[in-house]
Image (cartoon, rainbow, N blue to C red):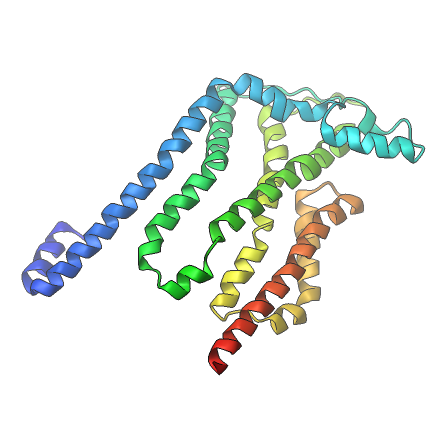
Length: 284
């Protein structure tokens, strides 16, 4: 709303309406305050990550090409127990990255720092969101969303960890060792970076499925009957999404699909509990 519109609105309102307008302005000021408090730790952590980018990129990004990476060591151990001593998981991946554009390293380091700063600051950001919406909630609503931020954070961390330690290494290992033409693999740093971050972020989002189902159940948009009815359709969708974010092999798709399907079944249980509580309140 422009300043002129606010002027005419203020002239037309009585004293009570002016009080309400001031309350609205107060909410905007509070929102601005919470946004600023949320941005501050992001900037601080992003600056720290940017300063140590050379070390962190070696530990977090480039380590995924080494046989010592935890996931590869686990799969190498399993392969050896199964009799496959020359498994690709037991050796370094022949990948060398390059900078194919001026300033590419700087751009990637900036994005890496910002994303890292956001992930580290998520608990604080959720807390700031909670401080903003808490005054507007009724006691019943406060009880309903109790622990909500913690669940969002835990599911996000679980998804990011699953993407980083399972999905991304499988992608790097599969395509890094797939070499029918026997040619050198020298991808751009941007390509390599996206090959890791895309699955990680995708898994972080997919793991929020129970939260989405919880909210939609609370709003009455979804019921357990609907979730059960369209279970087969959801399985197909999950497999398609898994195929997009993983290498084109069946095993990797199943590895991604299994936890998401488990979360979907948990979501059905959550929706059923919400519906049962709602019906109980109506009867009471």
